Length: 75
Image (cartoon, rainbow, N blue to C red):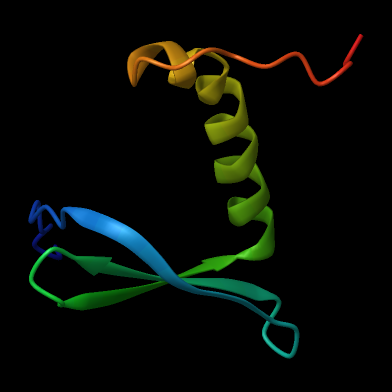
């Protein structure tokens, strides 16, 4: 059985986003406060699921950082 890693990477920024159409994957490169980077590559279907989850969670994000949510005219 494969040993699972539970190491945490504290990303500070997204340095790169790319789609790799030959492999149908989506790549995200993150950078931490010390300049270390990590490349995350996901199948496109998983990337879409993650994006939808982040969008759902982001409804409350402006309030969490002390901002105001803007109405963009969505119904």
